[in-house]
Image (cartoon, rainbow, N blue to C red; front, side, top):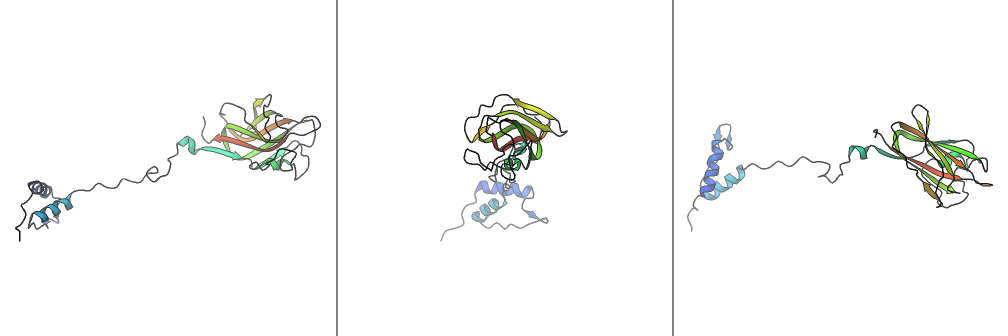
Length: 217
């Protein structure tokens, strides 16, 4: 049978310091009864302050913290469409260009918009869910690509502003045409695309995407 273990001087000093600052006091009375070294060390360990858990953040929870700019970017497909003319309705109608692209094959397909006149310059206008400061427009062409001749953006006041006029280099079919332009300092509510139909044929558009931010550039 062994005798009590000698008191650890470091533990004694720690306990005395805690008693001095009142860390072990409860209602003015000290509740610790020290009988041996083991009890003293357990008491000292139990009285040590523990670090509080860090408050959860989006990053610590495994959720990416979006920047304010990223959070306000919108990539939208049209919710409504009108046109200068339509070949038929509902096939080839302007509304066929609303929503996401749904014409997987190149060719004269009823799931894309075609004008009512061959070999003519026609336009289609698409409206989007919310106004944005535009940064990109993507025209998805599904028949005779390369015939977009002009793109206008309509602002909140109903004014049309041209961001592209010229030669469309698109050759892939289906193909996507996205001309470069400076981010707009005005809110855009609609996109109008002009096409020049080739002789004895049509240039058909499957969809038009508008990308922009809710905050000005």
